[in-house]
Image (cartoon, rainbow, N blue to C red; front, side, top):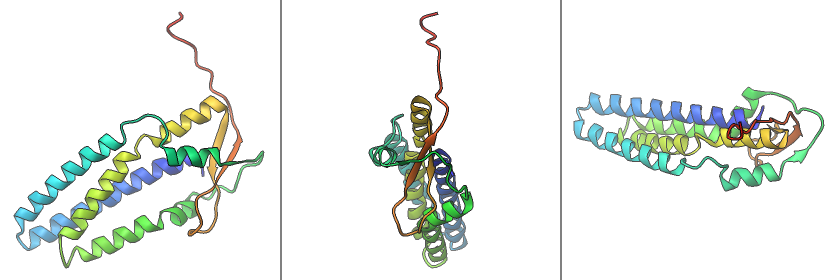
Length: 173
């Protein structure tokens, strides 16, 4: 699976988790008539959105992603492309977080509400990273792929040859 697509999928799945947790919060709080809790959680989600937008404002790759790209091993062959396995292996903590926080929402509605806020921050903070990786791929003429490995090992990337993008300078014309 291409690393840029993995990053985009991570953002979309995290936003989906935030939506699911927010839904559990609203349903659980409404069932017990905690309207103040719903208003408080809505304020937290707006604050989380502002923090996530602020953290994700840069167009360049974050330092951890830049280090991961620099450490990618070169290869002339494509790795196995198994997107479902890679997403499950790499994002299992997100899915576990969603299950636990969502399950606890039936005991205390604020737990998934707080978790939804953190998922909002994460999704918005990482929303531009796939574009940064694609820009590096186009500039250098390479493609980065996530190497399938154990879910408890750090993520590894493989760098393969790609096509270099040549952009005309529009200001010179």
